[in-house]
Image: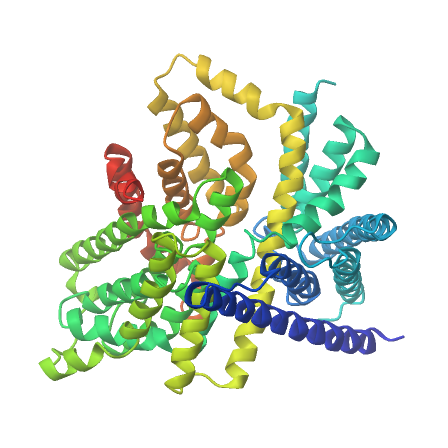
Length: 163
Length: 434
């Protein structure tokens, strides 16, 4: 598959994930606000708000990671690397790209293993009895797209194309 | 190899990684994972890594971060910044350097609904720079005043850095927010004084703008100031009074500003989507960095480096204020190279026990001073983030020119820090009331 085609697919996918993540955040904000109103005005809070806020935030962040990487928004220290000539800079970008994506593969593996462990143990949230493993899997899925984005960025540098 | 030596080598390895452009969050995760694996065992590190990541992502306390970040982006996209600048402009714009001073006032008020220095700098840059150019302001003064003013966004509550500091040190976020109010206002006044001195020495740098009529002054009160005041009272007022948790304050504040700006027609679905997209992007960056810092912190804790450092600091033949002085100089130096939030996350496990547990300094005061000191890093070379943001907004002003104009503001910031060190009550007074 050509890099330009892969770029389009990844861009589309991370854009959709980012959109979903955004609406998760909006839902989270609404849930908290409605809970505050119901609690203070009617004395009847929504049971499980605390748990749902945690879950929605985890999904929002997990699904937003790839878009952040796609937009080069993860903070890096550039001032030393920027002083190198373009050949060295390119080599450095490739090395760091391979290094970062390799480590993220370890992170993905560890998250999926953790999710499987939660599934096997049947661990659920105390109030709403929601199984945790589903959301850990989705977070791992976010890391998969983060890693794919990092690999794509490295390939682009390797092929001297611009994002 | 002793754990302490592995700890120190780990810190060096982390510095090496960030130098070769590995993102700071990834560098902390990698170093933390490897260091913890070496000191405990890799099976334990493999279990700790996903747990720390998921637990941080799903932490109720940390969910406050995207809430306040979104509040700032709604303010950004709804154009509230323009109304605030207009207010400052009609009040002091007719004085020499008045438009640059108006920028500081607008940044300070905008900071009351936005917890990010970059968002504050970007918002005010887009509004204030064209105005200052129109009235013949020197590019160096105008751009530097916007970059420096942006730093007010992290001192005046709500502040993402205060939230992260509060969570990392288990201090009350509400108290930290309260503690930031007076230093934030003081810093704004110090910045204004710096502008006044600069234009006093060379009036051509900031010529006076036209005088506004009383009618213009009264009408400017409605442009953004009302929204900020209302949201600040509802959101942070509820937090200070103990009605809300910080997360609830963030959510209620965001709901309020969303509702107000929608009703006033300043926001549409497209702008909401863009604000959400930016919020998710920024929050993901912050939360991954927090998770990385937690993993890194676990490694540093088992390496016993903080304990060794604390013992060393307590046995130094120096008074405690000199040790604190050294810590702040280290922060100032590192702040020139490392992003403010990353620096706080990275150094808190090391310096907090020394400053608070060993030397007995107030944790809220320490937090405010550290945030002010690292805020200096966002305007100083070589990685002054706000300067690059302003450069991006201004386009044709060379980066060196902005950095040249920044020094009066750095001196003002240092003077403000010195005042707060000499009189810690300025910081601790408001938090002591709750």
